[in-house]
Image (cartoon, rainbow, N blue to C red):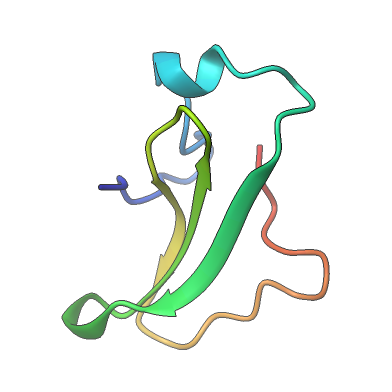
Length: 70
């Protein structure tokens, strides 16, 4: 399960599984309606947990290039 993003902090900062990934590792992201929790943009990579990059009470449009992922 992901953790809500905190302003100014990478959503994967301190996650050893994400820190261990090579810089060219592919990751997938999606923007979803999370029901009572509003909308979320989440990401996952093989060997790493799912993280929440952004949450909003309104629909999110991460744009044609996807969400900013620090």
